[in-house]
Amino acid sequence: MLRVLPWLLGIALTVYAAVDCIQTEEDRVRNLPKLVWVFLILLFAVAGPLAWFIAGRPKGQWPTRGPGQRPSAPRGPDDDPDFLRNL
Image 1 (cartoon, rainbow, N blue to C red):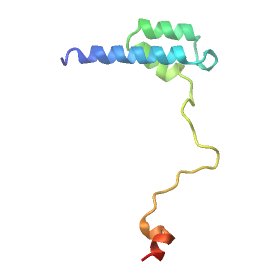
Image 2: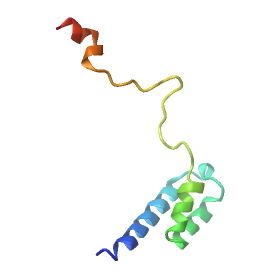
Image 3: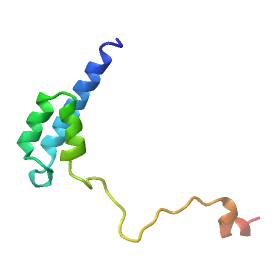
Image 4: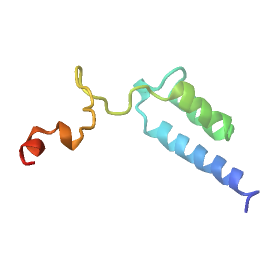
């Protein structure tokens, strides 16, 4: 089973990268045309998907916070005025 694991990981990486590339809009793909990326991903099993994730995938696909929004720091119960009032 351990000998098969690298092959399965390579296939999974290739399938994930191919689906990701195909679903990406043409104008958001970086460095090469979309069709070239699909061929690179499918022809070079591990190097193609890695190149797609590093150099071809659009940046900023993940949702971001708006300007000026900072994540709130965790607060302990002693920082909560309502909690202190109820003591």
